[in-house]
Length: 206
Image 1 (spheres, rainbow, N blue to C red):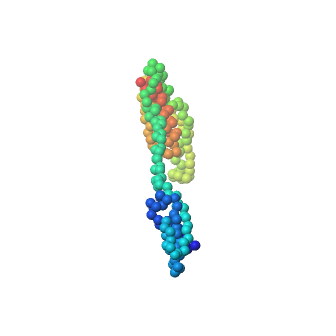
Image 2: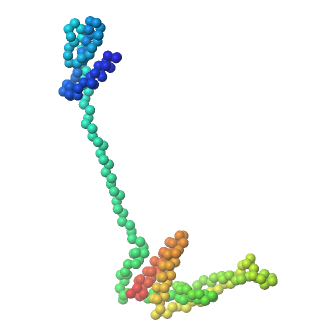
Image 3: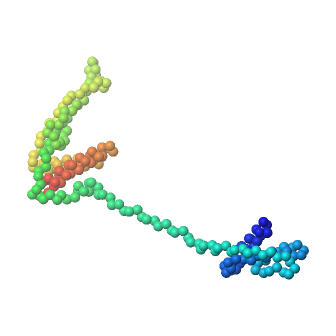
């Protein structure tokens, strides 16, 4: 086994040119009269020595090194984002002036405490206004709760002032949408788009 291993190592150590041009290698094991053992290739043993011949097939040549292919990075497709809803509604209206209709009726409403607001309803729902409560001695008592139902008084805005009132209504809707809480954004945005469409497509949008 040690002689065979040495033979294989010896064959692998042969010059590359010799292995390239020969399909096999002949190894001679020479044992001298003194018992000394030598190995040699492609040359017979000297006279007077015991010779053992072995043919070793040359291993096939190693394949040429080829670097792995460089991966091709494919860029993500560019997805065109849809324009924002506000940008679409801000586009000029395609309705001809002769086909425009007056805006819906709008009402100026006054509250019991002399405040006012614009409404699309002539008769808003009654609301409960909290009243101050007192104890039996007439002193203010925050523990009690009492309210009075009141109804705001509304009058229709005159036709000549309708567009001005609707544009004010639009500004109020824009302000409400801008400062809305996160859970009210969807509702306030829809309301803003509705009011904007009325102003844009009515006679107010000329």
